[in-house]
Length: 396
Image (cartoon, rainbow, N blue to C red; front, side, top):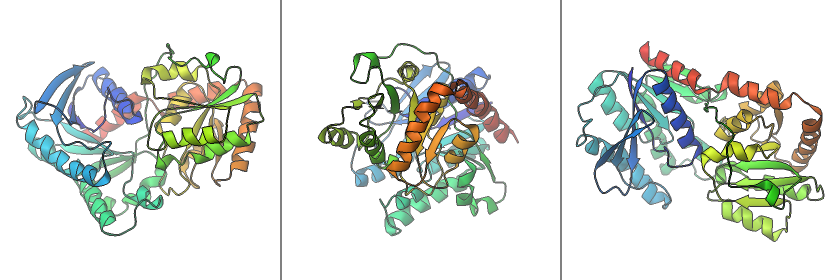
């Protein structure tokens, strides 16, 4: 099939979304499909740029800036983004291109106009990959009320949903948010698991053996450190375990809360905690090979369900998981059913401390734990399965 994929993140960005879309794109090509990825690119001198990325045709289109700016500027930039992309697409060599299917990735919620235009021009179906139910999660977190901003964002999201023929959600628990959408004709909702390509263990710029955590059982967190993660409890856990000289905590990444968390650790004199800037995604397997347990944190106020990309990377590397997440999240059931770690949903650091100590002991006694983690990755989270599912939905 000749498919176009619209997204707002892709390498050289290092976000989990960029890595996911890189792996998905490579798999489309591996399975013999022709794939074009369309990306908004602020700051470009020209209106478009066409590149080859491992056999993927990458079309970067000049668009307003939407990241690392204030909320008002970001909202305006995101609102204008699909129209700027569409305008600049018409100036590119792909202006008259036709597609057998349009796929797009949320976040962002603002791609609806662009996806609609491409669908209509080609008379094809559209598949929306939903990894982020916004603005619902922002309300749950207390970042937004249900006033005019919420109603605006909700209307934008609903329009985007209306453009899709098929929506792929990442976990069954999110299906309820789409009950009204499913009532429309010709619409299909399905669970599309997150995915991650297998990766070899290579060199890593972080050598834990040369740090203050050398010789300890290392709990690692690699990824975004923002409000949605609610990572304060992980520092509380480190403080609760500071007398355990055999346990350490490593936090790798960036985000709105990264500096605040590092400053908090320093103010508490937590010598069992180490912070490091983000590293290249290709270094992650080499990092995890030096660690023992992967950490997942989601703010307890969340009501949506989320299986973070970092959970997949832990499973891929054979790392059991210690999770502090919102109650009822499907991830907790998955961890328990597959016996690949432990999950706390009560927001209590004492619960998390007990689970952490139990997990450290289990790592030493359960010789099959790492193999179970790898098996979960292979069975549930391969890009091959995701591509086949998307292609099947677009072909029906």
